[in-house]
Amino acid sequence: MKDRVRPTPRPGMVLEVDRSTPPILFHHGEGFRTEKLPAGRSRVVYPAEPLLGLADPEGAIRRALLNPIDQDPLPAQLRPGMKLTIAFDDISLPLPPMRRPDIRQMVIEQVLEMAAAAGVDDVHVIAALALHRRMTEAELRHAVGDRTYDAFAPSGCLYNHDAEDPDGMVMLGTTPHGEEVQFSKRAADSDLVVYVNINLVAMDGGHKSTATGLAGYQGLRHHHNVKTMQESRSFMDQHRSELHASNWRMGKVLRDAGVKIFQIETTVNNNTFGVDGPLAMLQKREWEWNAKDRAAFVAMTSGLKYAPPQMARQIFQSWRAPYELTSVQAGEVEAVHKVTTENVYAQHLVPVEGQTDILTMGLPYICPYNVNSVMNPILVMCLGLGYFFNLYRGRPLVREGGVVIMGHPTRWEFHPVHHPSYIDFFEQVLADTTDPVEIEAKYERQFAEDEWYIHLYRTSYAYHGVHPFYMWYWGAHALQHLGEVIIVGGDTRAVQRMGFRPASTLQDALEIASDTVGRQPTVTHLHNPPILMADVS
Image 1 (cartoon, rainbow, N blue to C red):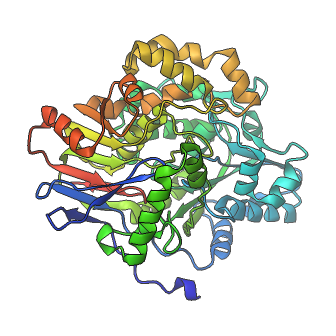
Image 2 (image 1 turned 90 degrees about the horizontal axis):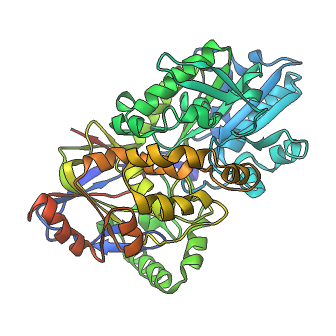
């Protein structure tokens, strides 16, 4: 096939900045900045080029279902009269959403074809969204495809997981650590649960798919808490993640309770912006931009400069990434996830020697919790300190007591339908304290059990009342590790409300950081997205 004749993808790299290095691209919400980094003491960590996708995705999916790891082929596990539940990852990944057909659609359609051939007629299809907002009809159609939606949604057999349904949730047991395992009753009562996953980063998948995706507050509170987050030395490094360990303990309880899971995991490359098209220059390294790339970038940034924020947001939120499937494996959860993780690392890992005094990052317009929505200040904090900071294996890129400089507009702006409890969290809780431990002790239960927030979660399109707490906790390890957090180009009041230092330019931020790390600090820029993961020695 012509489109598969591409040069061998180059691995990620670390560029040492000198006086000849061109300005470096920083994502900045629904826009961009270019910055000159200090020569002689700065470096840039670049992602690898996109791995080549599988030539026959449909065939690869079928082979995985017929030749699973440590389980019988899927058709052998299907029979008339059985109860089958298919659960799938919600809108929080991949980021940005991928072009149609979505991988979930491709997998689910083959599972349903095998189920129909086996005479299975009791089938439910569930978006495993835990405490995330419900997916809209358009979002569900994009994920599972029109054929599946039209066949199952009208009869109520395709729906969003409801973690607050008193008749729809059950307790299946407790781990040796005292963690309650709460689970979807429909899934628990099924003869087989087929989970359809997309692994965008190493944290995704495994037992987290079901033990988190089909759980509720009573279960999630045991690992979505400050202690677990502070003791997770990287969410992406499974052997150093307490979040990972807790989900694996819960997975054992699910297995012991008789829940039979057929796990299907997929990985995609990091072709976020395409090798051609209007955003192709964002996939390249700056010194490799040609005249066409430079002209396209100037035109784009000029247009965005004068576009109202709502228009710029709409433009970016409409982008669909041309991701390609790089692997698919199915079968027993842990055996499958081991192979998946290796494939994720093959795309993302970039070797980096040593830590830095200052870590810079340009935050893009999207995170797992503002798809088709607004990136509010709490989500800015979560993306930078929860996700980007944790994109490492081994040690953090920035040394203990160092500084993180994040670039983002950080507007005091919230989506009133999607994030109602975020508004109250930001205006009430953070006005009192920014300390995660104190926040958890004083306010979490009140928000988690608030009947109005629960009503909006169940009947509207709102994130659960406790969700902003989890987003704040997500950055707890970084807050504990760092000496200072500075946000460039953000709304001053919003930045200060979160306890961070505002700066108007990168140079101002570097000057502020000197109070913490000295006058000649080392600087490392995390050139993400496309996604990368630093393997820090």
